Length: 400
Ligand code: FAD
Ligand code: UDP
Image 1 (cartoon, rainbow, N blue to C red):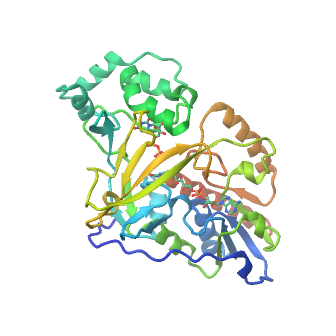
Image 2 (cartoon, protein in one colour):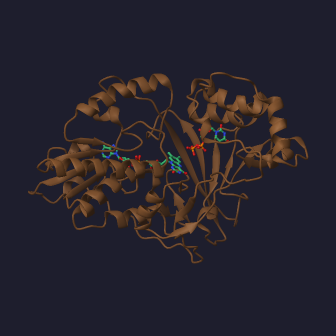
Image 3 (cartoon, rainbow, N blue to C red):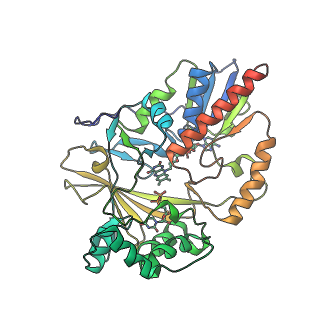
């Protein structure tokens, strides 16, 4: 069960970069080469080694493990997330129990406020949001339902990310909270994006101001990176950091490959590039003990170039007379962070997926390799399922 931490977060050191020139000459084969040390790669490696008894080599082009979930202590001693805020939440007991084998937890329920012309109101939209924004006194769920029903626009069928929101709350609230934010985040209008994107954010008639309502909501007590260190700490697992798949493909022979990078990259972009949206992060430490009342404040208006500011102390519960924050500036170029959910991209992905299915001896796992806008828990679930299928196949044949 989840532990509530009162002690200050401690954190182990980042793994050393292994430079290509200092590789030990390996003569032995690995059973499996895993490309990517994020959730997809680490879960696969852990299962393959610990459950399957395989010899596994994990490589990542970055100088650290944990993929986009990588966190570290900054100079002020505050545990910060290098690639933006990562809040763990899941309804899957299996996923939570699995990860609990590698970390203790700090209970944390994420709360987000949106800055609307300087006024901070709860996001997702709830009764408190409407009362604050319009100076109302809506008292019950029914009051809110009636208020929203008045404004909601009848749209059928609901296809886009604009439809989802406008059909629930009407144009004005859509424009206030979703249109500008989405245009910044994705570089396109919500009407050009699949409905699944804004459907991630519900509308509430009650006063629940939590961002998520999942059964399990907690942060790894000593951070994600330490959890990954424990997952990968096994005599059958070797980890090489700061190296490209292309650099090790030939030098480390293997029977099976687990690829968790972008699927279009794997196939040499043969059908063209799959669009991914990127972000630029601005990390700052301020000489004041706090900046904002909650972990994340969203800036939905287009006049501000960033989408949100995260203040990590809310996530970690750390005490300090300083505070560390991250601004997120969406952009096209840079590391691929978000697959972009829209029909034409899905069509292109399906062509790559068809190649992937035919690619013998390779498993494609994770957010980039399966081009799905997955949360961490979904990637863990996908990796666990992929491992189970693979283990079954190997059981039924004579090993890989
Ligand atoms: P990644 O973490 O991207 O790992 C893939 C790794 O493969 C990378 O480290 C990369 O360097 C490496 N790699 C790729 N190609 C190669 C190659 N050719 N050679 C060598 N190495 C290679 N999820 C949540 O549940 N809650 C959140 O609050 C949350 N917030 C997020 C905030 C942001 C800003 C972002 C971008 C994502 C967030 N996510 C969140 C999603 C979460 O990051 C992903 O679900 C998860 O990290 C995906 O894991 P992965 O292993 O599939 O991919
Ligand atoms: N969104 C928005 N305004 C908000 C919060 C979210 O328009 O205040 C939209 C936006 O398109 C965003 C999507 O809903 O990309 C999903 O939001 P979420 O917070 O889940 O995004 P993530 O944490 O994955 O970046």
